[in-house]
Image 1 (cartoon, rainbow, N blue to C red):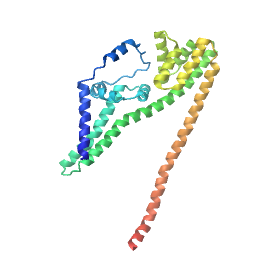
Image 2: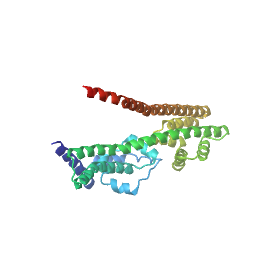
Image 3: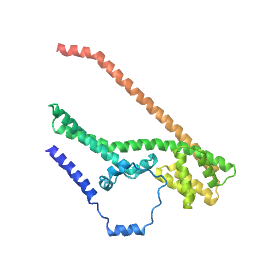
Image 4: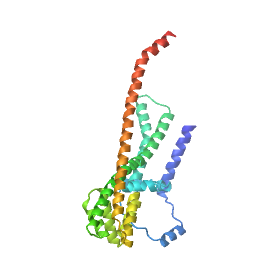
Length: 297
């Protein structure tokens, strides 16, 4: 009964995805009119390219996955900072899910060729577990990479703040200091800052506006706070050198704290293999005595 229900549910989901691809739902008229009334959103500063294979593969599954609310706002921010496109991410989720669902059945077919077979429940349950793991693996991978890249971005941002403070001390204006400081550094963080400043020049907006947008797109609050501090200097003539130096110092303190936390976590992980080895050694010593006691009963 349970295998039949699971197979029926899987077939239903497959038919639903196929129908949403063949017969996409047309938006309602009031939705179309609302899109015409609203202003066109600004183009994102950080743009990720999708692989051609991903665009072709996800075309069948994208409507159904997007109706489920995937990939989500947080994952989209993680994708932007990692440089991976949304279609590529959805294609990886669909591909790994299908591979996890079919792998146990392929192994079952190989066993059948060798005149061995398992119950239907075994490949079915194993396929569901592997499909769930395949569905979640891209999200976990993107989150881990995004966490590392955000930490590296904050490291570069502290250096950028120091460069801006030095340039301001030399008598440069706020916009000139931002441009000169971003031109010195290298790496993904400085490249994103340079892209934001070029966007400000092309769109004739203030650089702190695009820096704030960049911080919101990449989910880096420190960059949005930097934009707020610089906007005070650009609009109200406030002195921001001390504020930028304090923010740079706070970022470096946060980096040291994160490094100490990682070191403590690594030390705790190193103690686990030693503990397991010690328990195994105790079991090896106690095994003969336990066998003797059991045989004497």
